[in-house]
Length: 261
Image 1 (cartoon, rainbow, N blue to C red):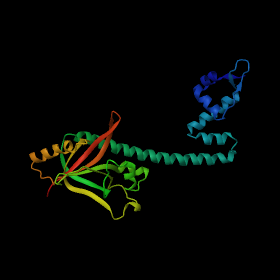
Image 2 (cartoon, helix red, strand yellow):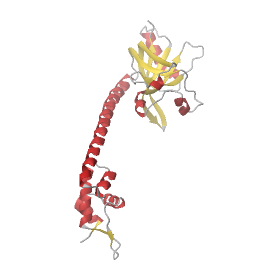
Image 3 (cartoon, rainbow, N blue to C red):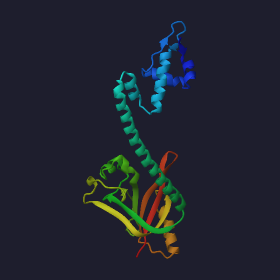
Image 4 (cartoon, rainbow, N blue to C red):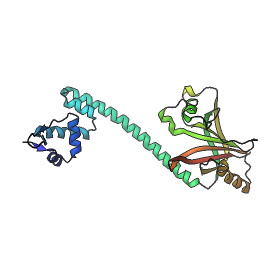
């Protein structure tokens, strides 16, 4: 007796598309009924699918499933189990690490929102940068190549930061890549032209990034004047949560304005 894909689907509680996928992968091999052009499935096909469902609950990959169902010796199945366990332990560790990172981001995100339009006094944590800055005519990729040697996991601690000094004759917004001081720098990043930026006593606020730097810093200058805080005139912007408006990238920036001793 043979059944159609719909009947097999109903019996096992899986979709027609899933069954056809396993056909495509060569797990089962239905026969075509020449009288009605329907593909029909045997009881053996159904039992193979139940095995696939079991292997899927064990989180086996399709490669591993095909290895077993392709005739792997019974004594060798243990090695597949061991490898899958090892892989899953690694995946779990990555997920736990990602969950910890998400908790930290959520906490920082809430603090960022709460600081918009408000001011506080505190320290500017250490970040590292190179000499030089990103110039608009150049491509960002070329600039990044000249900065730090970064791995994928380092980017959580990277910021496109800025510096602005109102004391200069012709003040100019300088944008550059910096790395949190908490990120362990690789040996390839620790040669002589590295700069550490930090300050113990700053006025701090959170702003929406603007190409008009005065729009970002004038509220700080006004606040400092009203509260008798004597700023050095230097402003450091650190990139926080990014967002998009009309397909254009924007973001929140935490601005640190060092206070004179």
